[in-house]
Image 1 (cartoon, rainbow, N blue to C red):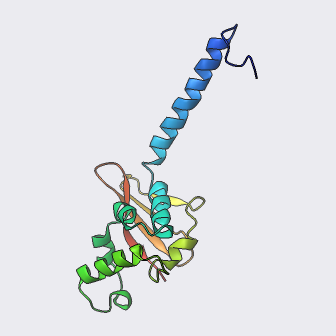
Image 2: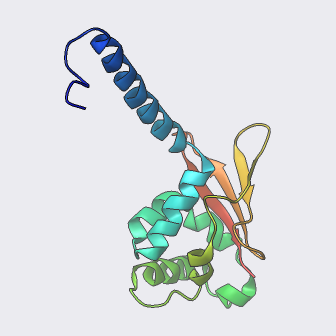
Length: 148
């Protein structure tokens, strides 16, 4: 290991290989950030760490609230339900609506992306369906969440 990066025969090749590995890592991370899986990972992380700011970046609360059933909204206006859900995200205690998110399998779950690459659907656990849409900024947001 002492002579690994010394300037000797083949030393330039080692540096080139190291640079290629670093470039591949950077490219891979940039690619991952533009996938629906990354949005799911970040949303789950936001729920686990009670970070509503990150959750709002990766979930379109207006779209999700409009699609919620009456059993969740209790007939309340969309804006009231949205504020309640955001407050629940910031609360350090148990999150009743988002409790199932903690059990999501976001790494190994299959993600189905539409042919036009604009929508994706995921079933992170049995009884839960998540729909994501690609934004003009090329990242994905959750637009529908069906929990059972």
